[in-house]
Image (cartoon, rainbow, N blue to C red; front, side, top):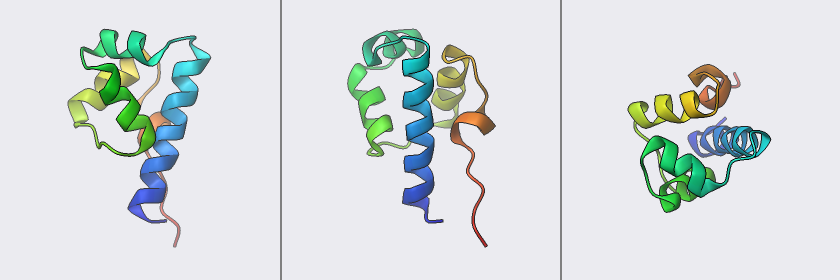
Length: 75
């Protein structure tokens, strides 16, 4: 699996987790202290968040890094 595919998969999971909690991009952004545009760019695969932001997002979405961002590579 390429990095782009892996990143997009993680972003799909992030959006799904956000929507499952009934949060808008703006509400999640406020919780993690970034702009709505940053959340949008992460979900679109146009921005790679720092590990600190990933942790903050996971906490806000009540999940962990492995569930939200980890992708097993194909061999």
